[in-house]
Amino acid sequence: MMRMSLPNRRRRPDPPREDALLVPVTIRLATAGDDEAAITRVAGRDSRQVPAGPWLVAERAGTIEAVLSLASGEIVADPFRRTLELVELLRCRAAAGQAFDPGDRRDRSRGRPAAGRLDLGLAGAGGCA
Image 1 (cartoon, rainbow, N blue to C red):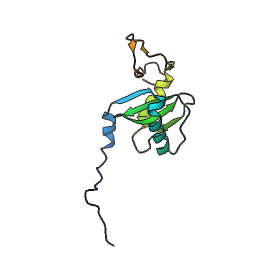
Image 2 (image 1 turned 90 degrees about the horizontal axis):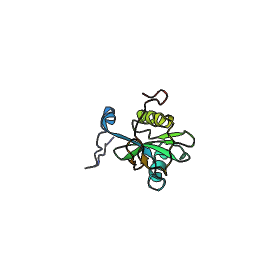
Image 3 (image 1 turned 45 degrees about the vertical axis):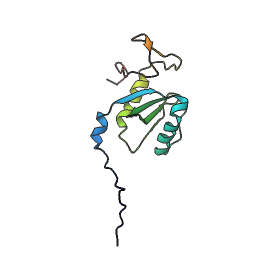
Image 4 (image 1 turned 60 degrees about the vertical axis):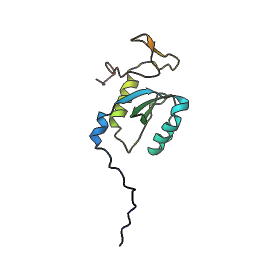
């Protein structure tokens, strides 16, 4: 049997799974218009329907890899990436009990706009240390 190879079509090797732990993670509220396509992509890769919004998302290197519905608690995550830790961060952040008011853009600790980002203040978040 003859093996056929495509010139210049080499697949780059995936980085080691441990490298995913070294990339900074952002946990934030999803923006309805801007993030819907990415949330739909993640749900499709997970063979699931898009859960009801609003959503809390975990992104690594600017790519949304896990989504938590704040309405239902449902999670969708990219099954082809290391997302277990991201899912746990999303659950801890949601369990922290902070009111997620999209209209309130104040960073209460510094008294300035938070630009839609949530810090990972996980202390006292029920099992999240």
